[in-house]
Length: 87
Image (tube, rainbow, N blue to C red; front, side, top):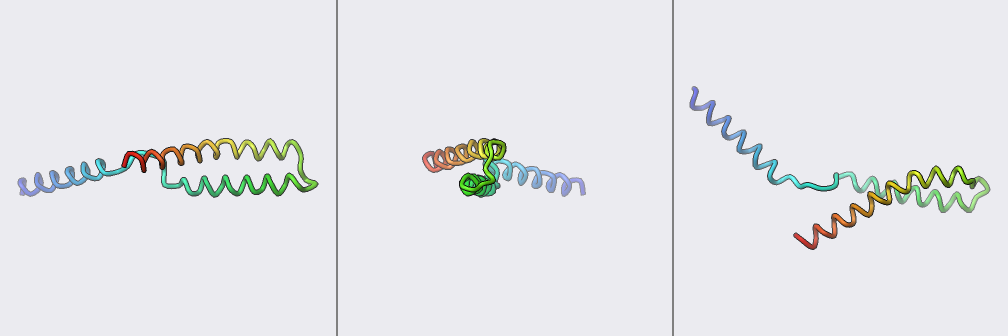
């Protein structure tokens, strides 16, 4: 009984070690959502800039969302390119 407990604990810990060694480090899997949000905000800015509703406040509000998403997009591109180069 004691031997089977030690063996099963050993198997579980080695399986957990294998999983942690194969999980990748990097950007989350939700990078696609960030890119879609960036495209949506850029499209909204382009469309609204031609309308009569365009104000400086609206421009600033859209820029507050576009800025961080643009940084995330650049990080995703750099990560993917380095992943391809060093793979």
